[in-house]
Length: 81
View 1 (tube, rainbow, N blue to C red):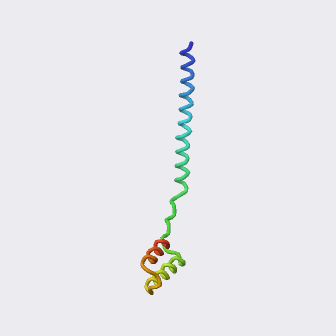
View 2 (cartoon, helix red, strand yellow):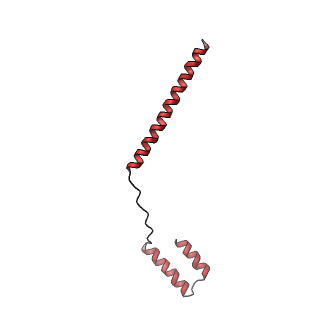
View 3 (spheres, helix red, strand yellow):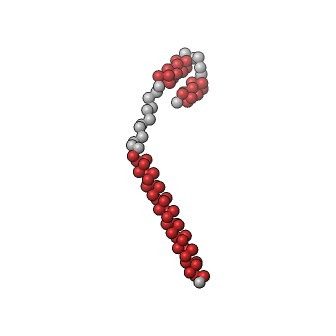
């Protein structure tokens, strides 16, 4: 009698495991399909904005005029990137 109960419990866990696996696989397929329908991601524009281009030009002019040193220029260049 003990073997019968143990077999029923194993069958229950196996069925539960299969249902859980099905839910996970189905959810993955749904997510992949949903994300694919969104279309391609638009490219990121690397064109400098007008304000950024102005700031970079001002930094170059100040460096060329000797108002700031090399270290300040390089740090400003990094900060603006």
